[in-house]
Image (cartoon, rainbow, N blue to C red; front, side, top):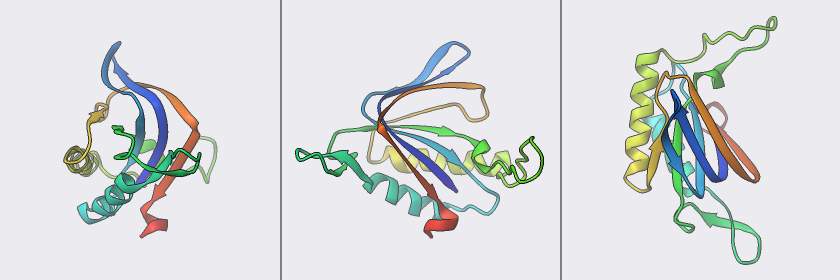
Length: 148
């Protein structure tokens, strides 16, 4: 499982010219699921995500969490995080989880995060337009293959 976490001042997702998800200060999280991922892996990454301290405190140090700044989450499924570009110029996506598994885990992550924070989402499998104002810029990548 991969999370690309971007600290944002604002972010939104548009599908068919309609904004379906929008947040102010918080994290835009692009979520990639592989065939080997499980709810247990999702639990570990969600716990790490919700405790991540990358907002600045009064001294300018990245010491504050999403909770400390009353932040929100915009969660967007993105199978292309598992692109394999080793051969040729056209990526292969065979390492991405099948859509049924990926959607199940994406919905599970949304449910878990919603227990603690305001959550907005993209639309699984849709052609989405994602806009963001990256604050910093500050982008962190969680890869379960490296973190767990």
